[in-house]
Image 1: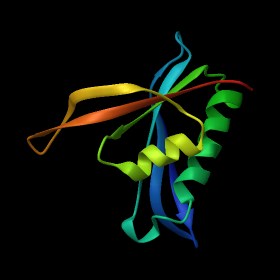
Image 2: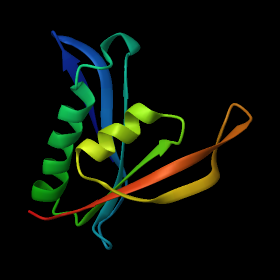
Image 3: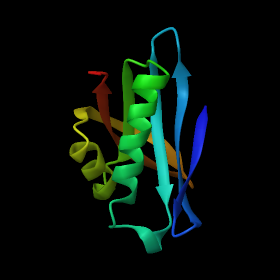
Image 4: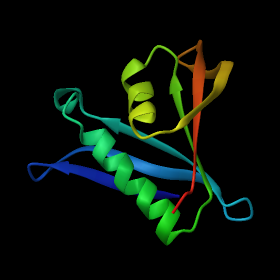
Length: 112
């Protein structure tokens, strides 16, 4: 796993990571979170773009997967802005606080 802090005005406002890295398949998942007060400024899009470059050029990964709750339109918009391909919906795949959530699955293939 690679985890990175996201800084804005010299303070940590979030984090972004690569996880479930499979070097044999040259694939990984990406995830992030951002403090509510800093949303809507393009911070995650910019951070995810940098992470993609790191994953594809430095780690030589071939495929990245980004999953977002179907009700999380902002995260789905990040995937779309960064040209991830929509693959489908994983029904009730995440259990959080006793409630199941559907996850939208996006992928990006290395074109570097």
